[in-house]
Length: 112
Image (cartoon, rainbow, N blue to C red; front, side):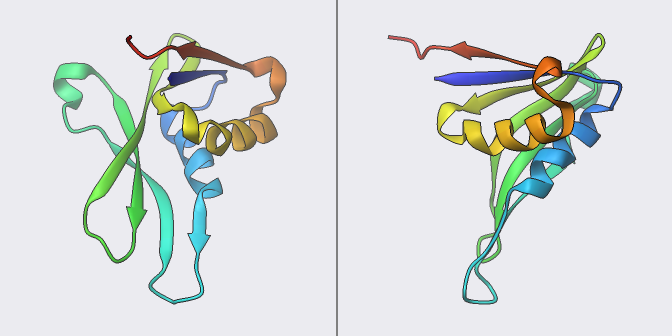
């Protein structure tokens, strides 16, 4: 399943995305064993409009994994294309900062 979180806030998409990224950091026992989430400006900004990408970064590997898209929609910020296995990684930091009343989510079932 895919999840989208909708946050009613005056914050910009980059700020909301950074809130999620700051929460998702893991340091293993080995100094090189670091896993974190980072936020980058989307590549096709001119075509798609202003959006950001949350990506997973594992220190020993150079490739980044796309985790979510973040963009403005009216007075809300949308975090979309999220795999349901990662839902708690988004839910906890968003609830802490924005509260339950400002957070909504939509679950889209996988195609059958």
